[in-house]
Image 1 (cartoon, rainbow, N blue to C red):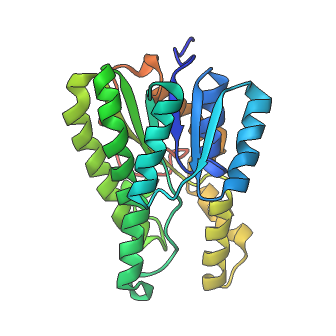
Image 2: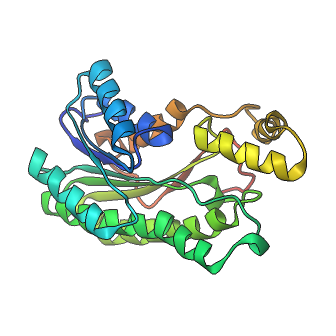
Length: 263
């Protein structure tokens, strides 16, 4: 299937590692040109070089903290100046720390809102008008299955990411008439460094090994295993493509069936 992504310009946030890197690689393999950002320039440069080497893609990379609006605004403007267009924006960021409600501080809540909700707002604010002008665009937010089913020990993520889901649905309604599609992709337990850190945190609190935590997560999915970043990226790449032309306002889980709700 030709996804129609050749020479499309895709901005992928938090793309130096983990799910963001997998998405960037997937888009590059389909012929997209990339604008990548992450907070650490050295890690980002290494990832950009790897993607260029493996796929031959054109990659523009800048160190950006997506919780700072001025940095996001400048990066989107630089991307448009570099490529003359912006077709796809993948909003992504790290997750807030694992804590119970009693352990959280007011500062934790403010930081989580900036990291997950406001970073998405900033990227949307800058990228959507560019897409709207061309009457074609894809805005994809990466959140978590926590927007569908709370995850143990992640009250900050469970709460704040749900706000992103509401934002996505509303933006889909507002920008649909301009042929700009807005969707939310919700990873389940996927083999990334972030997930391993969470396993270690929960294991220390519960007096078990990280392997036991990972095994518990795997048993919670009908497929009986943790997902791979490439499996998650495959859906994001499809939603970014021409072939996903009638999908908008959706929150789709990539979780091996772990979410127990009907929707």
